[in-house]
Amino acid sequence: MTATQLVACLRCNAINRVPKLRLRESPSCGKCAAALFNGHPLALDAAGFHAHVERADLPLLVDFWAPWCGPCVAMAPQFEAAAAQLEPALRLAKLDTESQPALGGRFGIRSIPTLVLFRQGRELARQAGAMGTADIVRWARHHLPD
Image (cartoon, rainbow, N blue to C red; front, side):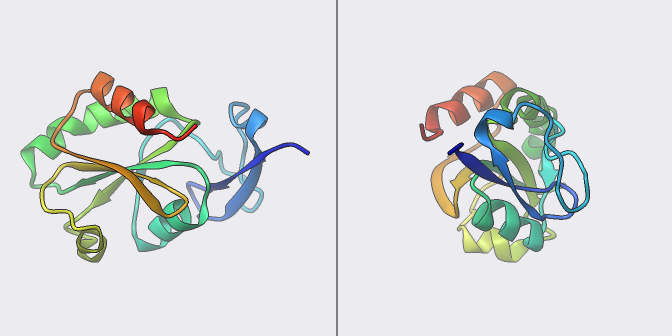
């Protein structure tokens, strides 16, 4: 039997069962036919957070940020570039703590930007402070489970 990965859709948040060997073959959502990967960070809200963090198997690296935060804005292009390098091994997402304060509070976010790596609803690692693309990629790969 082929090992599968549960992957949430970028557009409709439907959970898709994708064989691990096919993750790099541009899979699409079985519900809405959207691409499951696009090489860009996903903007998360509460519903998306539930689907991508709590229901999906795919590791998710979340950038907790706010639009008024200078270091957050400066890191945004670096995080974008990291998404292109890290997918489909993991998904990258941005969560605006100003528009989603309950999620920021739930995870005790005290400073921004803060990167949190999740897998199957569990926090695996956390890093506060702005980082460059190479540092984001290196940090994420270091903390990915085998």
